[in-house]
Length: 235
Image (cartoon, rainbow, N blue to C red; front, top):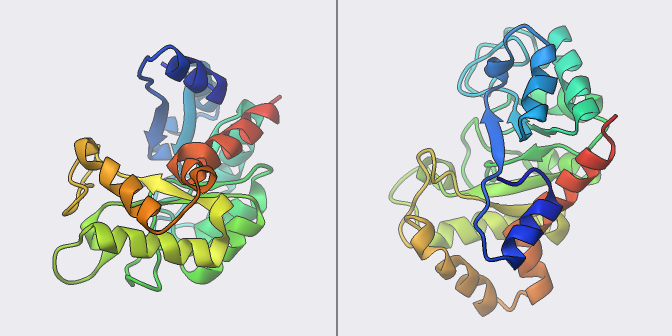
């Protein structure tokens, strides 16, 4: 188990695989703010504020605008996450929730598995304006391998994933992108069906002449940068 970027790098040096804990859906916090610290102490490094429905923290992209964005309790949750060094993840969040969280959080936020609305217009994807705003605050958006977020018709493949990544790079810059496979959810597309095929993703980047440094940023370096920032600013 790894709690920090330093843990990850050390495990890598010792040829050990790492598990990094996160929570997808702040519903797990319930109505008790103390649970944020509880999860932090147990190694949780990021929390996705909501999932496919509104909760007490904020509205979901697939919700019914219960709070018109982040609730008053949600603001407390975000500030406590900042205090405890937990990354704020706005994948699944409604657009208003996204902008509210961006204003509230004192550290960069992340979108762990969200694609580009300009290429696939579904509620879960991010507009170009959202991508710009996220980058301006130092955040990171990870391209995900869920077919329904890559294209609206037909079977998605590795070319679609690269197209979303490169669109995000054009809008945000290389320092704000990454890959969020969602293999533990519904992720998996033609050419990138599971982790055994991920070398194909790297090969696509090499064919497009991305540098080793840029590939390292895409392959987790950017995420580890914001993870470090969040953990350094905790109380």
